[in-house]
Structure formats: structure tokens, C-alpha cells
Length: 55
Image (cartoon, rainbow, N blue to C red; front, top):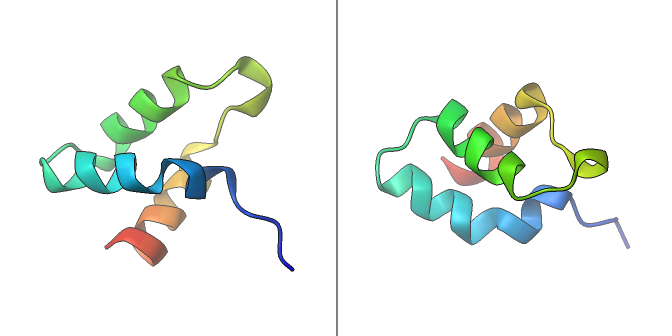
């Protein structure tokens, strides 16, 4: 079984932000602000997750 991505835990929150019209960069900043320093997500990984799994 494949390991679940950190971003999968925030999938519904990300979807809601994107539906509200928040830019991908702003959504990334909001999600990253909720994570501890050791678990931060890079923008490129977040961008690809949104493009491949959300939109």
C-alpha cells in the first residue's frame, strides 16, 4: 500500500480554498502556516498536487 501524501490530509481544505477563488500560491501559504517547520510543503510539490489531483 502506498504511503499517503501529506497533502491528502488537507485535500478538502485545499479544494474549498480553490473553489473560493484563492490562488494556488495563497492556498499553499495557508496550508503551510498550519504545518510545523519540519513538515513544510514545497511550492512545486503543492502546485503539482493541485494541478494533478484537484483541478
